[in-house]
Length: 238
Image 1 (cartoon, rainbow, N blue to C red):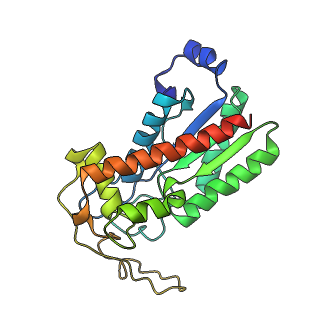
Image 2: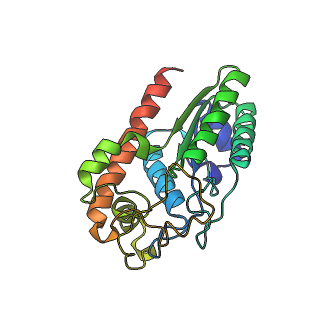
């Protein structure tokens, strides 16, 4: 059930069947020279559209902006602060709660640390504040590391690399503009640097040349199945 396409009457009708809503979170962020800026949003929203074909829960429109740190200086990236993400998340959950929803899934297609922490912090505050609320925060990549590493031919694959490129080839091949070269960031950990482009010029973490649409479909199935599994567990707790 896509919330954006529903009427007021349809919302009230379906609210009698489910109190669960999924909020997708993505980014406007560089993904090399070959993938679109909406890669994180595209992947998570398309995965969730498949989820709601199998589970009758509400799916809200995606929040397109997220917290980007290591890619913040790359062309095209438009980031928000963790405080802004926490406030947006809190506002939409509180208002959805007023409308009768009780089981909230915050699903992010962006795996940035500060981004995920902001969502978790908001969820911790909300679960204490709102009576009877259930909160789940999930980034599929975090819970599928083993499965994805076995599927990828590239060791240490990550941002705009083999897996993400495969996913976009599967979901929207017309948006893939060739392939960026294989690259890995070289940040001097544990130091925080001002000039991030110096250590990660192309914004790719992995080898996009190893990507394929077939591989992307396998990854998409892993993501959808994992989300459904967590969703079913949460539904049993209601």
